[in-house]
Length: 259
Image (cartoon, rainbow, N blue to C red; front, side, top):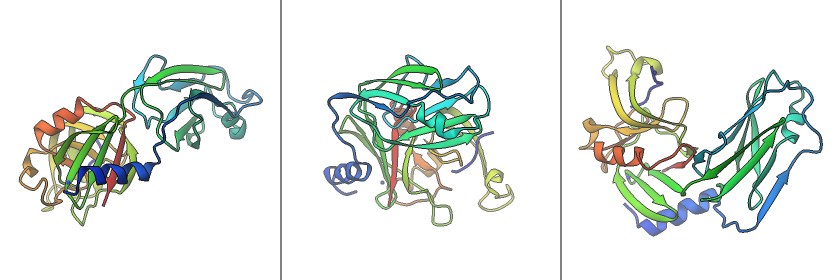
């Protein structure tokens, strides 16, 4: 199912190699620092905060989010203030979520099991990455495969979006973990009275996009999982598999959807 919230078989080796080529995972050894700042940010007021918070353990695709104390008028200066110290030299891409919220996404995965230190806009944080937990949804094979530090941990039958409601292809990260979510087709323009309409309470939901795509438990589609794509865009798993993934994944872990 697909909704905004209201509160599959080739060889495993080939699949993993394909995925790692797609995201450009590199083994990084030496500690280095990216310093894109020569001057402090003068326009934002004090009180900037950085996520992930200090002491957090996050997934290897986790973005950095800086929230400034007031709207930023000089975005270039704000971006130049970013300093990152981690194993290897990461590169990344900036985006602005609002006038006072800046986000930086690494172009490659962070190294697993590593300490990352960040300063920006006068704020600082230090967090760690956990294991590299990589989820790969294969639309054509009807599978969802999870690898941990390069080794396949579980390959699960899955059902993705039907042709009328396709699951988006691309590289994503786990945005949130929601034990219970009510999914209502009206949020994507489908009336409850429509044959495609639904209002369901789903469990063990891992958010993939802010548009309402999740990996979640779908007992009603177990008969199609591994064989056909019947969802409204979400990645459907059996209750047991969804529970396992929910308890294995961390925020910021990469999720790849491929055809």
